[in-house]
Image (cartoon, rainbow, N blue to C red; front, side, top):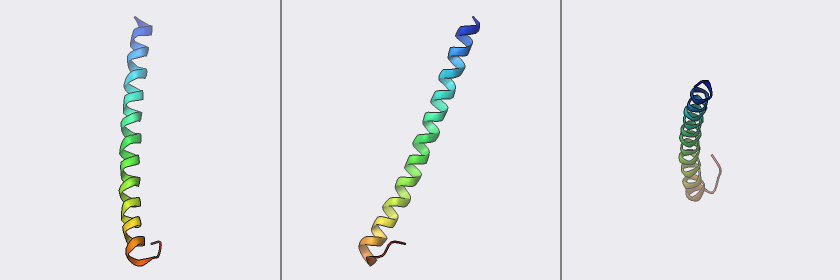
Length: 46
């Protein structure tokens, strides 16, 4: 029973961490795309 609870908690924590990492990756990607567009337009890195 205790092992089952532990497995469940670990799984929930892993899912939460995965979601956080995905959101972070998406935010960095959006910023990168914006900077890339600026670079293409101006030839300078913002």
